[in-house]
Length: 248
Image (tube, rainbow, N blue to C red; front, top):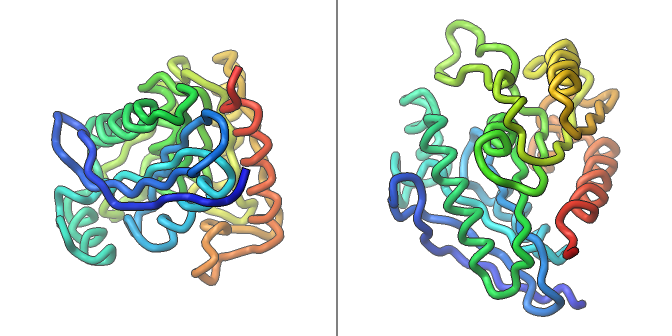
């Protein structure tokens, strides 16, 4: 298989049937393959996230990133849209589930889909990836340093996002968690508590914590980037999706 792909902006049905913007990337050759919904971080539907979406297509997966802030600021810059979303306390969980569900349905409708689908999210998207996996029928999910899965946001943070760890019994698929040992949100204690909750629920998961890395260690355009941790983390992602998104 070559690395030829097509990437484009489109519209898909989201929560409540709303038409929302989404960025889709897909290989142009190869056998039927699984799909990945990329859930963007709090800074929004930006170039860095679109690059990640293309990266999955280059590795042979169908991929899509729904613009979760499209309703707040259609056509606005990522910074302005993110500011508008923050002013409203972030994306409501119910709406998030509907938008991600629409993205999953779009991937599975493509002619080159093998019917399998996963989510991956970074920062706030990590929490939302976990939430999606507990609310939708998925084949795999990846949580990259998702905060407030176990604990509530600290007072004063303009984010109306409550803990979702109580949904662990409904987790529909294997979960991969990638965390930084120097992160505060989530801190190592929160990661350990989530691990205990998932173990008690009898769920399939694997967590990896990287020394010397804090929050957003995958972000190549930010000072928090840690190449060694990010490289190992990507290796874990490819191995995980290789196991769970391959055709039967």
